[in-house]
Figure 1 (cartoon, rainbow, N blue to C red):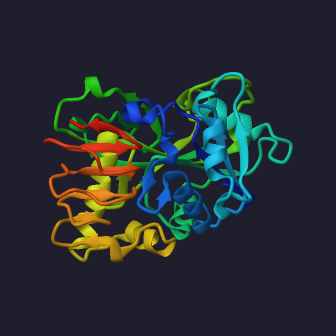
Figure 2 (cartoon, helix red, strand yellow):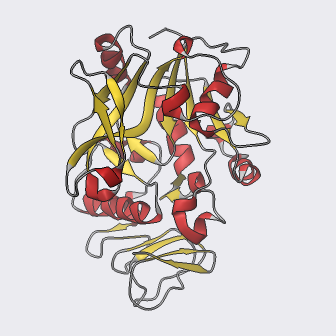
Length: 317
């Protein structure tokens, strides 16, 4: 991999998997306690040693820019608005690579805004040494096929060979999936313009592509409404139990979570209602169902998990 480097945080998607609230609140602006998903990724990119950080935008771009305008972490960010159409991930990477200051050269770290695959700057250097001369390194994770993930396939030499769709994988099978994070040698790309898929124009099986797999316990997924709830709840449960993996320690370092707001007995945040994470205003009634108040007041009633955003209650599976 080349020495000059930059990072791209993917934030142009439509957020359709976040339900009705996702139509109002951009997915990358959903709170992870005291910070947004997007701000946490910016801090993470800087912790990894990347000072030149780009973020691509399309859906709800004006809303994202308005919400980040006065936050110090975003002051040096280079925003890439995709107009008049969304470019997909492959096209977004090529859009960055064509910029005069990049010109299809250097190393690009791609971070998926709604998932956290924890690693360090030292890990990146080790992966690059082990895979010297390759066009890209896909950061991967072992998951259960029943959770809806696709499988990455590799040949006998460990090179990326293609993708098997989840519908074609037996249930309850352990599979290697793509985390959405990768290292790309931009000089290896064939220059194109317009929308394109990541595994067609950036990492096709015809290129020299390998993977770096992390051990268990270092992956946090916020990519759907249900996974967001599950990951947020798991963070509270682990911190209430006195556990702390690297990501949770990082959250504390960037003031992304306030441990004084965690109630260990009720497994709640900013309230003492069982299994409720209250990031809004006002008090929560004792009979409020388990859930997360992203903004506004805790107004939900009845049984079942839910999300609350400015007066709207969204039920979860």
